[in-house]
Image (cartoon, rainbow, N blue to C red; front, side, top):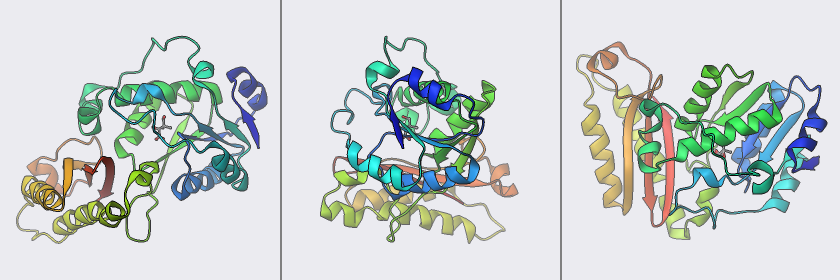
Length: 283
Ligand code: PAF
């Protein structure tokens, strides 16, 4: 595997490649990331991964400084997965001058859910993803469904800018007890780790309540969300949101949507101690 930090060198290395499959990451790779690399191999060749902890997407009180950086272990894992190039720019490589041009997602998608609780997050994500796409020029790029809103924003950005990169969604990789794998799980204490699968369990309960609901009446979406939030609070969580939304645009479903069986997804973000976890489940 070639490890490249400069944009110029990356361009030279990938010149003439028309079927590149790209997996952007912030490192601290776990099985979830590796499953993205395997999926990438099904969609293209060569597979290019990136590791870059993107300062632009972290808020001033977030974990940029303490975000786990495990470069050597990551390299070994990517080598085993047959990744051809690892693009690992420094901040100077990727942002040689202040990144003044930014991509701002539409408010109707970018300012709700994660965007409400992490102002500027999707501006930072979209900006770096566009820039990484410009560097790698992939035909496909793989994004996990665990970051459901991020996936939708990147997909819509790629479509609206007519980028030649197709966005492929990868299923969430879960531990046996249901917890979605995430680099931030390593912040959890032993006790918190044991409690953490409750978040996914709450989503499963909502999905089950909707799927088994009496077809003659409509499910009470607000009540289901509130009930799940209360249960989490009682167990010591601090939920930011539990939201049942339409898969198509992440807006709340209307009565008509519910009556017509419009595809839904339930999304959650909650803090356990100081660790903020997110998860979602398509219904
Ligand atoms: O999902 C992530 O790891 C990051 O948001 C991404 C897409 C690599 C952009 O920094």
